[in-house]
Amino acid sequence: MGHDISAYIKPKFESNDSSLPDNEAAFFRINAFNTKRQKLFYGILHGSDVANAGVSGNGSTIEFTREDIKTAISACKYYLDDEAAVDENFLQRIDEADSKTEIFVKVFKDLFPNSSSLFHEGDSNLDEIRDEIREDIVDIWKFHEDILSEYDDVKKTDETAGIQIYFG
Image 1 (cartoon, rainbow, N blue to C red):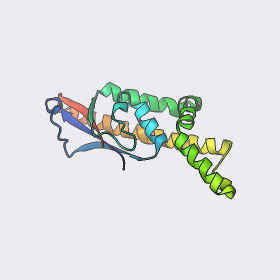
Image 2: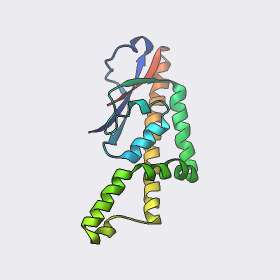
Image 3: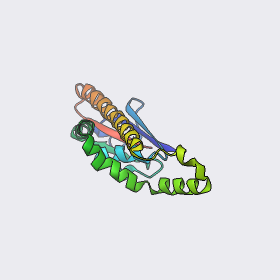
Image 4: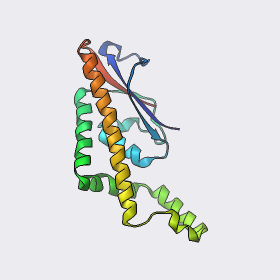
């Protein structure tokens, strides 16, 4: 299980056709229970959150504009340039939303009292999470850059080209 997200550049007249072409412009993977990466991806690409079905995408295909992709790239740049923005917009919300993980850790610690060293607590853990978030944002940025590059190439020869992203 997981989110297999594929971007395609298709002519507009094919937009009602549910079949996707073989020429994938970009691919992005989110493991089923990686809520951090999931929240980052769907939070950065405006309008994609409707395709998030939890442990995977919901199987829908959504059309995006060039401006949607540029906005996502700008958001990635913003979060990479401003560490405080990552803390305020993602780190705190991810910590609050990860209650299942907190419950698991508490139960595990209750069952195995000497296991505290397995769980990195304190500031060093926040630094590790912040670094992981930055790595995820770089991956998301690359996904969107790949889409934009392919789109601009195709658009030179096909004015009807559009961006479609499949959320599997």
